[in-house]
Image (cartoon, rainbow, N blue to C red; front, side, top):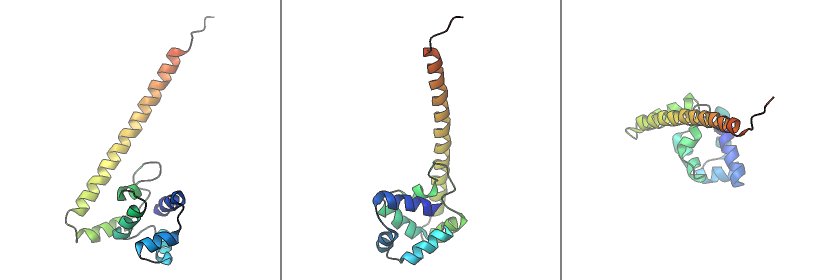
Length: 131
C-alpha cells in the first residue's frame, strides 16, 4: 500500500507525518485520509517523492519490486484528470509502468538463472564421494 511505502520512508528519514504535511502545504488530517483511501492527487505524490528524493514511479511499485500493489484505481484516475493539463502524461505514465513491469520480470528471470548457476557451481566444487 502507498501508506506503507510512505511510513517506511518517514522512519528512514526520522520524520513525522506532520513534517511531511508541512512540506506539502496540507494538513495531517488530509494525509491520513489519503492513506486510509490509498489515493491522492498526483501533485501531492510528486511532492512526497521530492521530499524523500525518490522518483514518483517508486510509489507505483511494491516493496518487493512488483508492480501494482502500491496504488489503486483511484490513483490512476487522478493521473487521468491531471493528464488533461499535461498532454501526453497519461501515455508516458503507462509507458513507464509497462517498462517497469518488463524490467521487474527480467530481474526475476536473472535471479533465477543466478540461483541455478550458483547451485551448479556448488555441485561442481563438492568432492565426489566414492563408495
